[in-house]
Length: 548
Figure (spheres, helix red, strand yellow):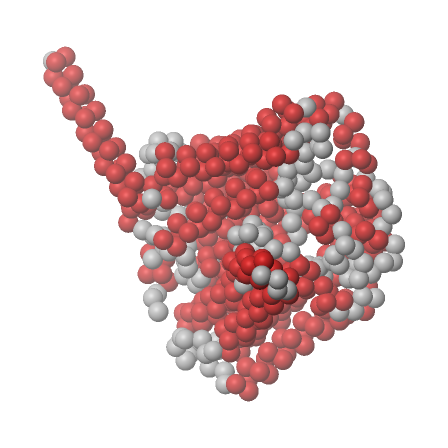
């Protein structure tokens, strides 16, 4: 195991760290990202989501023009693509090039960028998802005394006018009691206005981003990695800002709480860590995955099986005791356990298990077999396999020195924490990759924990670049709010065309960013710049001699 100083050096690559960025400054990158965020705000006026039939906004001239005119809808779509890819994502990449040292002076730049890039999205209409309107429907269920774990929002009268995705109107909520209370409070405070009901959800998303901005750097630094680099990598990532702030997904608060909880558990405050992780579970129960690893942090590497199982039991007892108390207060008990399967009822083409199961099911159906049954069996095998992997990662002894844990020297304690959290990162990866449905923001669950346990430059960082590009494209081309008389296929075609061209530009033709995706181009461009600079110096020298 390397020392913290060596571990920090391992996060750098010779080409990217020693080659200075050509042209521009970090300040220009910050303001470029702000311009991109403003373009996302403007684009949301035309293709962002609103509860159309009950929203007073649709009766204002600005929104009438932006949403009912085909040309305006196309312009708003282009604004989204250009703002997200050619400005915001590019600005994030350029910051990487400008802040090569990641010294303390980079921290104010990153925080300024985070504030400026977030601010316009705070007042945008929900982008690329209408989950926020499902939150409103679930809040109404709570208000009317209906059980959201057994009733979909289709149980509400006039539910369609709330604006939720029809895919989820029959499904029970997959969320925990804390989020249900927030939904209920948001609906109560809004007094029937969907726009006002969105405000608490956006503030909750912002709180999640703030928690990540605090605890991701702390966890990275605790494990010997540069905190400013981790802040840039996770929190300023455009996928995080678009999906957490722009789309209002409750994964932001869920992830912020679990990262904070894991930090305190690793810093010898296990009970505080368990409480925070439990609050995360009470937002979205997928973070149950973190509990066995919090128990391992509590036990320490010197623990035998008796101590491990004892503290696993204690961890589970504290967490489920809190959840039981919440269930007693809201009268819904542990209803969220049955709803854990809700996201698994759908699939998407880029999820390996989802694609494979439906291809096999389709082929079986062609020969007269029970294709749907086969699809379901494959998906169930994938989910059970991911559970077994999580159990194995928790049970197999963590490979570190025998001196870690809560009673160890600080350096050994950090190494043990790093090893446990890397196991937890792989556990989340198993659950995500073996599910039939992978949402773009699921990437952030993994990125947070891999980043704080060491993501090196080179192929590891390039994977993050490519994934960030891919999931930004998926967001831009997936869910756009378009009125029925405007051909949605044409609008989506524009989004795909502009988005793909923008991505190709950044990866292949933009001389200032393409080297991040293809190191060979970085070397060639650097050599070209050196030759160009040498030629300029020779020309200047020749001109000086001529003047003399």
